Length: 201
Image 1 (cartoon, rainbow, N blue to C red):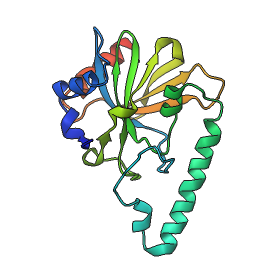
Image 2 (cartoon, rainbow, N blue to C red):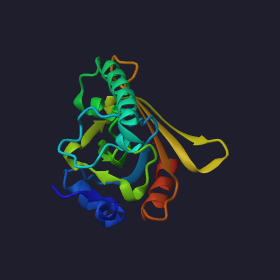
Image 3 (cartoon, helix red, strand yellow):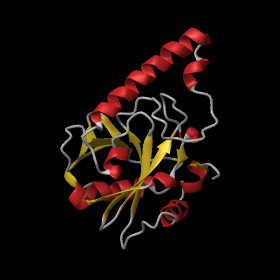
């Protein structure tokens, strides 16, 4: 499968085609790009057959690579412990904070459809590095959500924090997203974020 970069879904038509490819289009659709607020680069093996070099090994020789990879393994182990009580595969995917830097999602009358994004395990996510993974699409119904909130960030008018608490025994079954109210590259972001703020997440 060829890489799906931001150029493929930065327009309304492109993002609609992306969600049509996974069969998730509703009567009403609200497409948005969001960052995983809890993202800490690790590697659980979610991205199979990746060809990039782990950023850790670029930090300065074997010791730096070993040290950074040790930290990544610790992060991965912590994630595994947090996900132990989560049996719903979609919720398990959405609580992955070590591989998934963000999502492009669609809010419909049925619930939410999430397409995970990767950034080659970089600490700072830039649009030029983002790749979409429709093969890992996750659908969440309204019944799967225990609580959801949309909050402003103090003194920052360009971002909102959306949080989902899922119906699950695990206290870690949560997803926290940073949503930019507008983006110069993503043409549908400002319009759809305004819809989200008026209707609620």
